[in-house]
Image 1 (cartoon, rainbow, N blue to C red):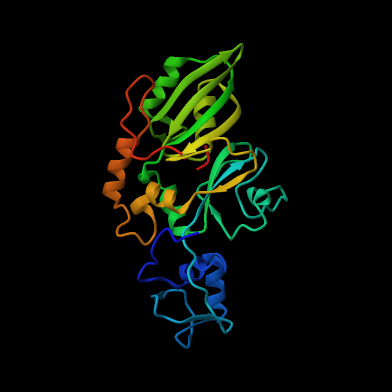
Image 2: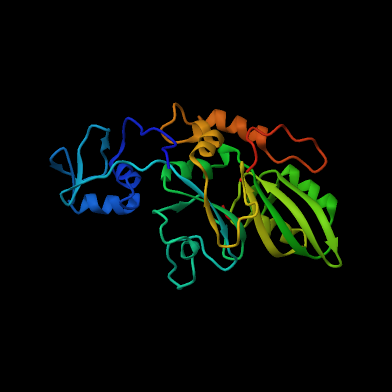
Length: 286
């Protein structure tokens, strides 16, 4: 796959190692403290060092490979998988469902054990952290099956935000999709994604969430991706959709600019016209 972004002029040594696909940044820091990393002939004892493209880096005497291009995958997470590389309880993880030839990847945010649907993965930690930030303004959209009486006015009121158990939740776009007996399907969109946010807000309205499916994350859609399936986003689409959000781009969004985008993209109450999308639609734990 062609590179989707240029390598930054200077970056922390642990990130340089991670971008080369050797290991995670945390494991890279362990290699450094163990004295196994050499930069320009000098053994490192601390990860507090920036390196550039002209610096020579070796690990155990082996030259560091060139940085891998930024890549992004869509994954259809199954219910009953945890979003982690390993689980002390021995439960299956999302990584158990990935193709064996996948490079080292990390998830962009999380979906809880019983939530299913779209999960984005990348080989670049900086991109993951940028896209996880609420300030980036990307809306996460869900289809939610609930049991109990649906109060459409109460759903609409979530667009004003809500304080629940001392936690402030931002605007949520929630509307009834269809109802069958005591069960109903809802459409929910939010830009923050606090821990179990969708479940907590709907439980507070007297609704039991029986199924929760993330159908999109920003411009990326779940579409018809098979359950457990994984599909790489083409480099051209990645560049078109992410633009300046890609690591190594001319400029990452400032906090002020990101907040402005978040206001523009924030979920709108049902029935209100939404602003024109900035991205063509393809798309933390709710």
